[in-house]
Every structure is written in structure tokens, then in C-alpha cells.
Image (cartoon, chains in turn purple, blue):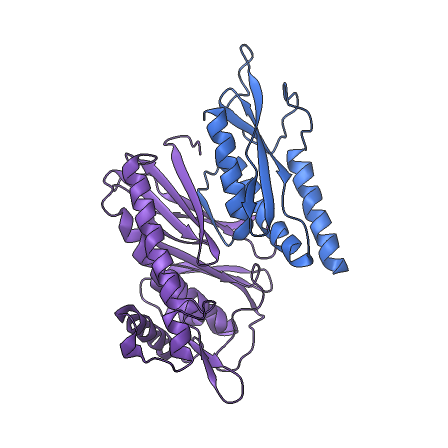
Length: 255
Length: 139
């Protein structure tokens, strides 16, 4: 990609059922060290998919959900993710939950809402060793960014307007941190308020910028699930900034 | 479904209006779209323009292919030659993903957007094909 200042090298792969895009600028963009780090990042994501996928019957999470094994039988990352999910449930007053109602009176375990951001944040550590290099690792539009130094150009992130996808509603400059957007535009009604089982309609998209993608992603989803209460809840969250686009078209920033 | 189709059509027409559809092999681009900021507008001598076509990138939704018109080493235009068509769900995804990415690309020279939050599957094929075209163009 040719920009006015520094050339950007891009890579794209499909992992965990979504496109994962990498952009590198600077010393290791396009060299073998950059490519080796990309391979390591992909390996982290493939491993997360193997452990956590609800689409794979043989994943630890699927077997856990069927009661064939316990958390103690799983890699320690499973306990870590479930603990994050529980923390998010409590902090969102129940709007976010990794368990949802299943057949009969049962519950289905689906930690996907935690795993995506958590896994991409872990994968991004593969680039820590690349000195002098700017990194932007995006999985389906949720991303971790890093730049080489305090004078480096930021990454410029366009936030899609959920009401008019031919436009961006905002452009966010991001140096070191993470950004996640929750909206119903691409995957249909996959976000529900866990307390009511209902799909929020008053909020169109929530974008959260935070220090790491685990919590940027959780907070975007948890805020979206709260509908009318999204902005009120986000304003109380520490260290977050972002954008809420309402169903009415109104755009509000926070933080 | 009817509503969705109308919406898709209007989206496509916006794309065509903004960026044109260069069916020729693009010897020169006499009238570049005004919405695109080009760094070459002041150059009168030695103007060289060429068109490069990215390879077809397969996505789980279907093939995506883009074409670049390059003038004096700068992207002057982006054409989307192929994008997935099929059931309504695919079209809905396209209508969300493609326009914004076209804007992203042409905005590289003005607003300098590096990544879009919200666009998903089709963006992959788009970027793959775009990258291969950029590689061919030697940008």
C-alpha cells in the first residue's frame, strides 16, 4: 500500500472463520523477520481455534459444553477465558454472558465473545520482537495497533457508518492500543442482551478503544447488548474512548 | 428481499458514479473522477498511465478482483471488476464492504485510512487482489 510517508506491507489469511489482516510499516515490513512473526501470530490463532471453537465438535470447549470433560481437563487458557467472561458478566450487570439459554432448561457455553479479542491480543505479541516496525493486526475489523516510537505516524482507522456503509463515520488515529466495533451489519443479529434474550435495536454500532483488545472487544459487545444504556455504561469504564452510533443516526463519542 | 435489491442497486450505482468502470485497457484516463485527490494533476509532460489488474482472490463468499489505474506512480482510480454475487446474504455483505473499501483506498492519498473497523469478509479478497495489483504496478 502506498502512502505519503512509509510503504505498508499487507498480509491476509482466514482463521477462526474470519479474515485476519496484518499491516506492517518500517524496518521489518516485508522481510523474513516480519513474515516469521506473522506465521507465529497465525499459529496462536489456529491454536485458539482448536481449543475454543464452538464449530468444532472435538474442541475442548465443545467437549466441556457436552459435559465430557471438566475445566481441569482443559488447557489453562480455558479457565482464563471463562474467568474473563465471568468478570465481564458481573461488570456488565449480566448483559454480557458466555452462557446463553439452550434447548429445554439447559445452557449453551459459547465463549466466542471473549475468545476473539483475547486470541488476537495474544497473537499480536508475536510482533513485539520487531524493532523499528509499526504493526496493525486486524481480525474481522477488530484490531491491535503498535508503532515503533513516539514520533511514528499513527495508524488511521476508519469507522464504518452502520447507516451508510459507503462512508466512514469517524477516523481514529491509533498508536499503541486496540479498537473493536460491535454492530449488527455483517453477521445479522448475533448480539443479544443476555438478561432478556432480546436483540438491541436502539444502538447501531459501538466502537471501543482500549489498551488491549480483550477488553475493547468485550466492552463493545457488552455495551451494544445494553442498548439504550450503552453510552452510560461506557462512560463509567476506565481508560476507554470510542464512538456510539445510535439507531437514530446520532453519533456520540465518549472518554 | 425487494428492498434489499433496491438498496444494493443504489449502492452499486454510487460506486459506478464515483469511480467509473474502465472497461478498456486504460491507455490514458482523460477525465479522472473529481472525488479522487491525485498527486499528478500538475504534471503535463511525461505523463504515463497504466492499468494493472490484480489476481482474482477467492473468498468463502466468491471471487474478488480489482483493477488499478496508475498515473505517474500514483493510484488514480480503483475499479472493482468482480465481487461475489449469489444469495441475498452475500449481496448484503458486499454492499456493506465494498464501497467503504473503495473509499478507503482512494482516501489513502487524502485521509490516509489504513484499516476499517466493521468491514469483514469481502475486505479480505479486496485487499488480496489490491495488493497483487499494487505489486504489479511497482508502487
